[in-house]
Image 1 (cartoon, helix red, strand yellow):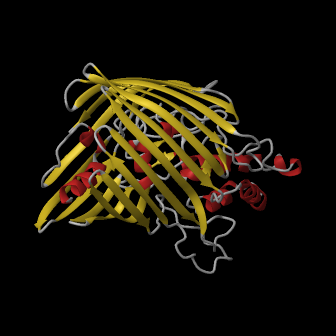
Image 2 (spheres, rainbow, N blue to C red):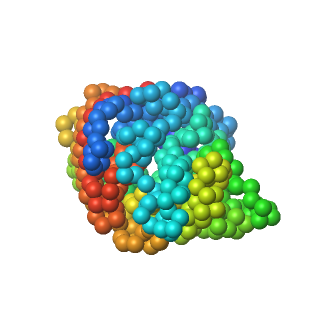
Image 3 (cartoon, rainbow, N blue to C red):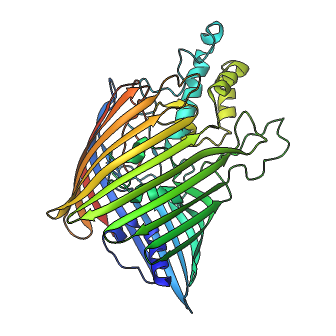
Length: 458
C-alpha cells in the first residue's frame, strides 16, 4: 500500500509522465514540460487571429519533487511546480482577452443595454466601461499573483495507512474531471473549456489512500484566494466571517487496467459583496465518470453538475457600484480591486457576472493508432441559471478531434481541431490546456480552433 500511495501522490505532480508509464522518481528530481504551438482561433467578427501559444496540449511547467524513505513503511515527499509561458517567458497569461489584446470587441461581462436605468445610463457609460475592464482583468489572468509555484506546492508523509499532504494542491473533483474524459485537460476540445470547477486549493490538507484498485481522497482548504488583494474593508464589517473562503472536497475511485469509475465533490465557501459578514456556500460541483478499454480503444463518459448561487458580485451589486460612485473609474477600481473575484464568479457560458447552474455531459475515446494516439470527444454543456441578465438558457455543443504523434518517449508532435456550437445566450470560446478561451463576440456566435505544435518532457 505504501508504494501505491506514494506513486499516486507523485503522479499528481507530473501526470503526463506517469500516464506514459514512467517510474516513481527516487531522491530529488528536476522535471518539466515545454509545450508550444501555433493556433488559429475564430471567435466571431473582428475576433479571428493566428498566433503562437504556450501550453496547447499540456501546460508548460518546471518543477522539483523528491522523496525520502524513513523506514518502517514511512516516506516523506514534496513537490514544487511552477508554470511558465513558452511564447513570452512569463509566469502568467490572459485567458478570455487572450486573442485580442487588452479588450475584446463585444466581450462585456456587463450588458450595456440593461445594466442601468435609462435616466442614469448615459452619464455613467465611462464608469460602465471601466468596471467591465476591471472585471475582465480579474477573471481572465492566470496566476495574477505571479506566484513562483502557482501550479503546486506541497509536502507530505506517506504511512502504511495512507498519505497526508499539505499545501497548494489539485482539488479532488478536478482529479475526477481530467481522469474520466478523453481529452484530460488538453487542447481546445477538452470539456473543461465549457465546465465550471475549482482546480486548486490553497492552504489545503489532503488524505489519500489506494488499496486493491480503490482510491480515496479527502481535502480541506483553510482559505486564501489566489490574488494579491484582500477582502474589502467596509464600515459595516464587524469581523471576518469564520471559514469565509474555505474549501472542502473528496473523491472515490476504482480503477483496473480495463475499467475505471470515480465520483467527486467540491465546495467553496465565499464572502460576497452584498453580505461581507456572512459565510455562504459558493461554487459546488459534483461529478461521476467512467472509462473502459476495449483493445486499442479507451472509452470515456462523464457527468458534472456545477452550481453557484452566491457569486461575489451579482448584477444588482454592479449596478449599485456604478450609481453610488457616479461612474468614477478610480472609485470603481478601488472597490472591485479589493474583492476576491474568482473565475467561477462569472457565468462561463454567457460571459456575464452572476450565478451559475450548469450540467455537463461528455463522451469520448482514445485510440492507439500507429506511433500515436487519436482523441475524439463530444461535450454538451447547459447553464439554466437566471438573473436580471441571464434571461434564457445557455447551451453549447463542443466537438473535438486531436492526434498526438510520438517521436520518442519524451517528444511528440500534435494537431487538433474543435468547434463550439453556441445556442441561445451561450457565447463560450475555446482555449487550450493553458487557459480558458473566454467568450465569442455575441451570444450564439460559434468558436472554431485549429492547433498544432510540439511537446517535450524532461
